[in-house]
Length: 104
Image 1 (cartoon, rainbow, N blue to C red):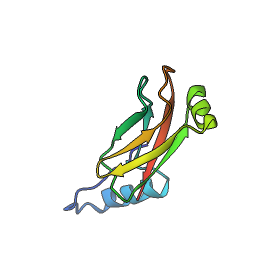
Image 2: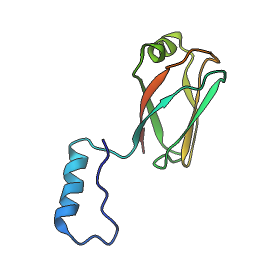
Image 3: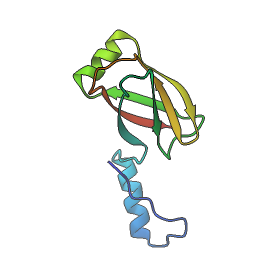
């Protein structure tokens, strides 16, 4: 659900109103999906809307991702400008897919 982002010099009021309507409807450019790396205990997500003070929120969208959450083996271990790192079980399990939103 991406949102239209008018340029800093935009003067067309209809485009500015469209952007505001989309934000009010819940659209955001700070969302995405990530599948955890296999054979590694960390996965780094590169996303332009992430800053060092941001809060990434993960939601499992597959059974294997929900199992990872249920095992208590996943957390966001680092947040930086342009990325965040997820620490998780070092597993060969594939399909541990999460949706994410980055706030702040």
